[in-house]
Image (tube, rainbow, N blue to C red):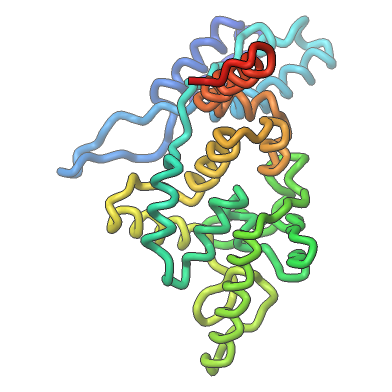
Length: 296
């Protein structure tokens, strides 16, 4: 804000000025230095719509305080529309690609990590701090209550990505098998490693201790390239899980709850590329119920 608005008086910051400020941020507001392959400086990269929206928040708060103190009559930020993010389909795999990946990775010690991410839809920061006391294999449930965020390279606890991040998810027989396999491998590694780092984390490195989310994402990128599959981050596996649920007929509200989304409407909009298939399936089922005509 300072280089663009800091030199202006309160009453000089009009809605037009704020609109121009938003456009400037969107076109080249990043302060990160960029260079090409030859080392030549590149123009600043524009900020995303969501980043600009975040930048508006403290500015609006300052003007709101100014209105309360009688310094200006109205908050100019409220008169300028927020930038709208471009709608894009999250990167994900098709069901065939997901099955191919798991088939090719079977036998690798990281296989349980990828299988559980795909089957559960957990965020990577939820998976790395998942603990055995929060897993009930008999009842086939997992309680998601701890969340890791990165601060630089360090992992720090967070409150979760949404108000519904704390949740219990049900496990199918396949995921129960994944966790049993992980438990057995973990016990074996603990016996064979002299300086094993004991912990109650479910998914651990060969020498014990929790994984770092960035490490897992880099591993996944390397593996997918080696296997000739579209490159995905760990978050891409979560998107794949969401798409698989919707394509399999899981109600959007149920899928949103399983994934820990606070707003099912935003969740449905994010995965609108799946809903046309669901609409067709619904139409075919209604037609068969009413007219006895099976779908083609």
